[in-house]
Image 1 (cartoon, rainbow, N blue to C red):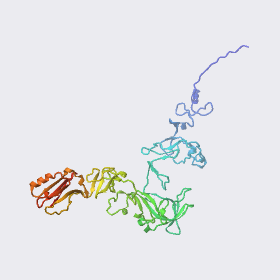
Image 2 (image 1 turned 180 degrees about the horizontal axis):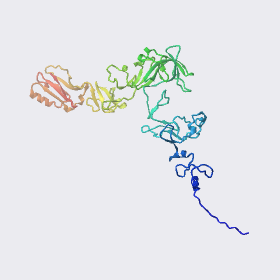
Image 3 (image 1 turned 180 degrees about the vertical axis):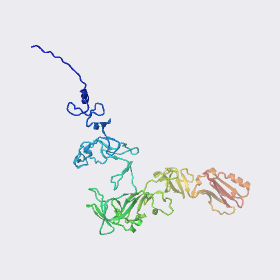
Image 4 (image 1 turned 90 degrees about the vertical axis):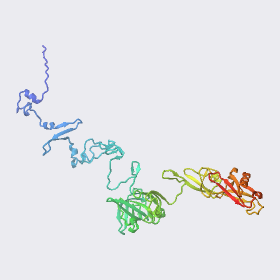
Length: 520
């Protein structure tokens, strides 16, 4: 059997749309295609189109992969373009689709835009922070708002319409408070109910954490402040009973005439109250408070009534109440300290130039023993004073053992009689018969009541005689130039019936010289 011969011809055709293939076959508008479907030719070209072509033409995509649709809202003149919507998510408000949102259809995370009216629920938080796009952390340079995964929030401001409950309020590491802050027992009122048995009694439900107790006791004197309609109201009342189980206590208002200001207000919810005294318990009659309006810190004691009187203030720092100050006092309105008692080891006082003013200490009579065992002081803080020989001296050299004197380099004379005087005593009296002169004159120099005779140098004594006979007196003066504080007289020293002897001593302390005379 003879083999047949075959020829293989390969042709390559360009892929053409159906419309072009129809044209190649000579089809015209209105003719049926190969598959029996109709072909619509519009306005020339290939004339081929699809029913969804208008929808395809309305679609577009941005560089981030988001789809957009262009459409013309009903009644509008112009078209608008919006992102493609998620139909079921948009209809989640309808009951039949509620499970797609409220029941956490998006279990792990949400990564698309959410309408402003939707309530978002998260089963698992992926991001470490919720923040605004412009969030920048910082007190001085921060912006926006953010909350991290630990619950730390940072924002510009916070508005609360009832109350803020926190353990500590801190601004830039500085604890701040306004109005008054009491260091005593107290609490916050959660609810107030009038007591039907009395017009002035109330039952207060306290805002107490589980496990805590009401700190107030029966007969405690309490006050409360509350900002109401832009102004503060104050309530003064006495605790009548306490129910720890119900977290309530019964209180009775103080009469208007018995409270500060003469007007009392009923307590109200959210009011902060503090105990500042007790009608019966002396141990609960003490308290401390800080007042920004009064500009003082006060410690009270013995408070057994609503009105705080001057006797109740034991310590005041800042503006001292006028009732505690004497008339025409120099510190009125100035920052001062008022104390009932002061026990201190050291005191420092400064002058207007901020120089330390030393405290003068009275050490009594000077003692040579104390000078060694308890030295006399003269430093920046203390300067000691002593009494010696009827004079008062102030130490100017710390630790000196020198005896205080009018001419001392270690002591300065503060008070006392330092007048120089010279007395002459006669060993045989002051009356002599003519021709029977025989006596010794002795001079003594006094500085106030202090005898300084021994301190006069030998060359600082001089004796002179005045009888009227100048030549004879000059000879006598020369012969007795070597006498110190004493001279012996006989009949030869007074040849005439009368005369006088003069003793002069020079005191070398830069003061003066003194003299005295004896007449015969």
